[in-house]
Amino acid sequence: MEIGRISKRYAKALFLFAKEKKEDEKVYQDMSVIAQSFFHSPELRKTLKMPTLSSTEKEKLLMLAAGEKICDTTKDFLKFIIKKGKEEYIHFVSMSYLDLYRKEHNIIYAEVTFSQEVNNELLAKIRTFVEKEFSGKTVMLNTKTDDNIIGGFILDVDNTRLDASVLGELKSLKRTLV
Image 1 (cartoon, rainbow, N blue to C red):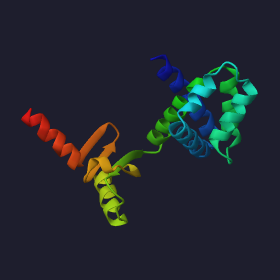
Image 2 (image 1 turned 30 degrees about the horizontal axis):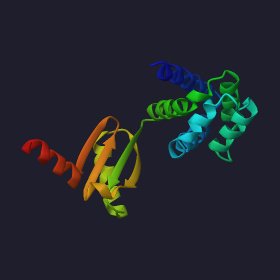
Image 3 (image 1 turned 90 degrees about the vertical axis):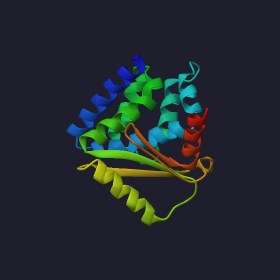
């Protein structure tokens, strides 16, 4: 509970500050990279919590996680977070910032999972479907593959899931029979 509240407060403060400086898009890009770094390296969060790591080392680690082309607003924010001893929240702050930015700019994030790579024509149809369902929103469509779903696709948009996979059908059939 506390993690969410603290993260949202820091994210909102950063968002308002970045917006005031007209750097909200740059900070959005930086926060996207940071969120991806935490997603792909779960040990990053554990490392940041280590009491033996100095503030300077934590700062270097976060700058590395943020990527090469980080804007000054993001740099200053990361330094501030470390100074306040709240570095363990950065992953959640980055996710909260992304949510705030997307809401402000009417962007909806959708993720579609296929059992194998698909062509651009099918992706365009799915994007059109999501745009119709969430009219007035720009769709950010992310794709991934998971051969465990056997066939079909799973579409996640906001808090809604459309499971049109073979695996989903098999699970549904099993629930019906058991």
